[in-house]
Each structure stands twice: as structure tokens, then as C-alpha cells.
Image 1: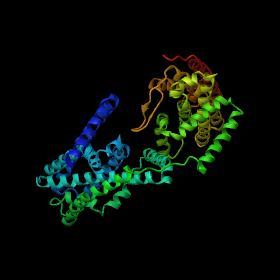
Image 2: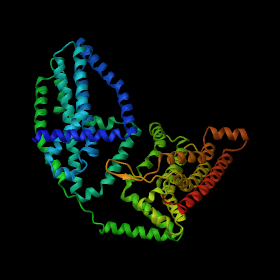
Image 3: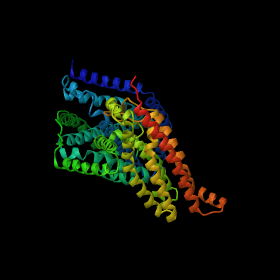
Image 4: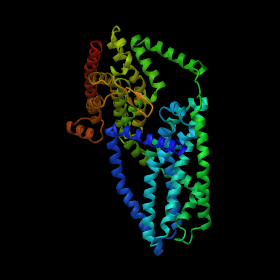
Length: 541
């Protein structure tokens, strides 16, 4: 089999494997179909825009077509590089069964097959759409000969951007695989990247990052693609820059093969860094954990403290297994955007913090008390007082982490909001009650609807997470028990209730706190009792 045949076979197998993966997940297939329908009107709008752009250049009504075209091609190149980098980091740069593949084919053939699969999967549709844009532009400008030149000016940045993103990710992964210090800081880097993404999403200030990149790329061959697109159409387009863009693209494509192959070899053949678990930092962490465990054991039963300690260790070693905890943060996206855009904290923002904190406290460790044990479940259920230790330990683990953060955020944002100091105090008391009782409430729900099988939380990581039914039932329960205090502290509804009863807002807030406390404690006791009985009477089928 020739090298070309091997590359094509690898690409074909990779595409077939990805299609089987998507086909076996109907929800993901439906999401892709909906996303495709969403992009249909955008694609039509792009074609109309290209036609109108060509018409405007033809009749001379557009003042500076080169500037607009340069922005389009640079944005297209940046999007292609970012998308390719994302795809390479998640899937393409670390294929499944890598060791087995490298024993049968060379890394060059494997890399060529993976890149070809990406180009066929994403590059081919993008190139087809670029050809359609070029045709619409040529028809609008009534210049048929402009179509092939414009198509080249659009396809070239897409291809070079895809290869650039792939190469950058290979560089990052290679450095991370060979540097012990950077490998240890991987979680920190990912967390910082996530916070940056969340900050951009909240502030909606994408231009602050993209515009400097556009300014840097304008005098490079990437910006010269605009001259290539407008050669023979606009007078300000430079033939020299257009020719230089073509030459630079050809040189880049010729050099990308050996460079990417070298990077892939450095990554795939690397032994990886070995983390010494007996180093000074690990020793300090173990000592700190021992001190914390001994102090907690003076307050709580030692068996429950042991369960809580195991929860924290699992979370530290595999934080991605708790990725489902990010769902409650959806509640804070829109309120946080309003705070950032307005520059002021509204009266409803502390209420969202209380509700979100309570929601997270229960989902963190307690929403699947039976299923989380996995293979250790037989040993757990045969232990003495296993139910009480398991339920109490998971509840303690979540409450000790979430309660201080929720209360501090409620007090901090409450004091700079329109709420009075007494209202902030009562709202903070509600935050304590809800975050402490959320864990026991979640234990019963998770025990009623457990999940034992592991599901994919990323491409390479599987974990046992709460079931969708348990998550939905628990979310509705938390909303119900939190409703009295949220309604009582609402600036509109609380004021209306105070006016109707002829009393002060503080009295209404206190009534809301009492109502939430009664509901939370009763629901928590009943739910925890059910969870304890479920664990202690559990029978294997």
C-alpha cells in the first residue's frame, strides 16, 4: 500500500468512526441538525452581502473596499485558526488507540490522515461556501473573471488558518507533555482560559481581543489576501501584495507538512512527565489534609469526615468529573451581564447568588450517593452505619465548600445593592440555611434515581454523574424551598406584600426566612432519611 493510500485509508476510517459516534448519540445528532438550520439564514445573508458588496464596488458607491475586504479575510483566518485549534486540542491531536496506530503506520501517515479528515469534514464545506461567495461577488460586480481570484483569496486564508491552528495546538501539547512544571499548571491555565472566556461572554467585548490581532495581521500576507480578492476590481488593490500573498501561501503549505510532522512526532513519541507524588508540595498537601481531617473529626463523626475527604480528593484529582456543576452558573450569566453593562448591582443579583449557591451545594457531591460509589458499592453497603456516614459525609463535603463562598458573595454584593443592612442579614441567613440543607435534600433525590454507569464528560474522560431526572427533580425542589425567602426579599413582590399586610419589609423578610427554613429542614430530614434507608437496605440484583 502506497503512502497516499494509507493516508486516505486513515482519513476514511476516522470519518467513519466519528459518524458512528454521532449516530449513536441522538441528542448530539439533533443538536448538530438544529445548529445547521441556524446557520442557513446566516449563510444566505452572507451570499446576499457578497452580491451587494460586488455591486457597490462596480457602481463606485463604496468608499474603501480594500479596508472592508481586509477585515473580512483576517476575521476568516482568525476564525479558521481558532476553530482548528479547538478541534485539534479536543480530538485530532490525540487520536484513540495512538500506540497501536503508531506501531502499524508512521507518524507522518497518521498525521496526514487526521489532517485530511479535518479538511474533508470542515474545510471542504467551508471551501464550497467560499466558492459560492466568490461567485456572488463576481455576479454582483458584473465581472466573471473576478470569481476565481476571489475564490482563491477566500480559500487560501481558510486552509492556512486551519493548518496554523493545528500547529499551535501541537506546540502547546508538546510543551505540556515534556515540561513537568507546565503539566502541573495545566488546570490553572484551563481555569484562567475559562474565566477569560466567561469574562468575554459577560462583557460582550470581543473587539478588545480581536482588534489588536487584526491590527497586527494587516501588514502581513494574511492582510494581503484582500488585495488578491480585489485585483482587477478596485484601483487601490496592489498587484504586488496580491502576488506576495500567493507566494507566501504556497511557501507556507510546503513548509507546513514537515513542521507539523516534526511537532506530531515530538508529541506522540514523548514519554510524558512523571509527577513525583512524594515531593514537597504533595507532602504539604497531605499534611494540610491530615490537619483538616483531625479538626473536622472533633466536630463530625470520623466516618463522615472520611467520606468528605474522599470527595475532596476525587475533585482535586479529576475536576472535569464535576463539570455538570457548571450548569447552575447559567443562572448568573444574564444577571452578571446586566451588572457589568450597567455598572451597578441591582436588588435581584444577591437573590440569584443565594439560589445558585444552594443549587451548587446539592449538586456537588450529594446528588448520586449510591451510584458514586461505583465498584466500591458492595463494600460500602456492608459497612456498619454505612448510610449515615455516606449521606452525612457527602453533605458535609458540599456544604463546607459552598456555604462560605455563597454567604461572602451574598453579603458583599448585598451591601452594595439597594437592599438595607437588615435585609442583607436575613438574606445571608437564608443562604446559610439553603446551602446547608441542599446536600441532605439532594441525597434522597439521588438515591431515588441513581445512575451507576459512567458517561463521557469529555472525549477521553468518563465519570459517574447524576442522572438527568435527579438533576431536574432536585432543581425544582430547591426552587420551591427557596421561593419564600426569594419572594420576601424581592423589591417588587416583597414591597407589595408589606403594603398589603401593613407591616415593614423586615418583617416580611423574616417571614420568608422562617418559611424557607421550615421547608428546607423538613425536606432535608425526609430526603436524608430516605437516602440512609436506601443505602442500608440496598440489595444487588
